[in-house]
Image 1 (tube, rainbow, N blue to C red):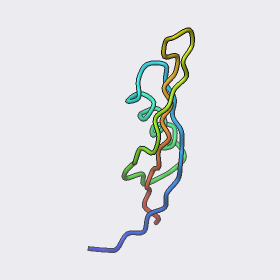
Image 2 (image 1 turned 120 degrees about the vertical axis):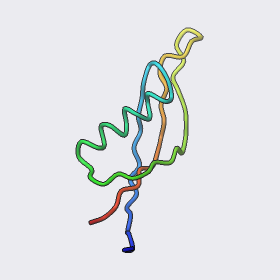
Image 3 (image 1 turned 45 degrees about the horizontal axis):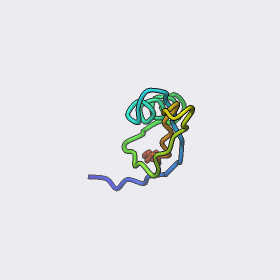
Length: 68
């Protein structure tokens, strides 16, 4: 078994529908340019309220990716 080294990067995903979709959107977009993403950790959940209703969910998360 080899030792692994990871790097962390902080990203923010958003969605008008759900926290889950915001996380998935962020990871899918990051995966287009970052290789070896192996885990994520949510740091903050926030949103935008318009006229008394939720307009957008935002999730700040850290992604961990293995360094080659």
